[in-house]
Image 1 (cartoon, rainbow, N blue to C red):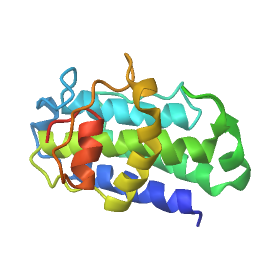
Image 2 (image 1 turned 180 degrees about the vertical axis):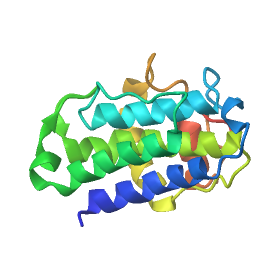
Image 3 (image 1 turned 180 degrees about the horizontal axis):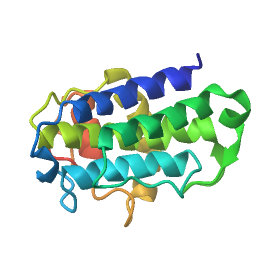
Image 4 (image 1 turned 30 degrees about the vertical axis):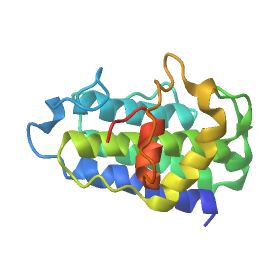
Length: 178
């Protein structure tokens, strides 16, 4: 198993476990992403996975079984990562061409981590993220700082308190107040 596939599986399992733990009525709760309730946040994450899997024609059905749709989307990404040819295929992105594996390892994993925390916070679930994945995501995102702060990207970052742990620094970087 490739390092990227292993890393992605850990990140996607974090989101999936929180999605699986949703209780009736929680889909309409507000999230730290002010434009989205829980349902819209989950739909965004699923749709992002389909776009990255080069299947933009696939979209989440907000009224459908979100857990099943999440499973299908993550399976598509994992299948692509497991295929050496697909994994190495160059794909376009907001920062130019890169391999599919690189796109998953960087932007998709970081986006999923942020939204895992958003989902956990909105639904009063455990907010601890995979420390290795957070460290990896922050290392990738930090040099891109101002380039990712635009509409449809990241909002303003929050200055972290001195001595803040890696997860707090990551979340603050993504504009989340912890």
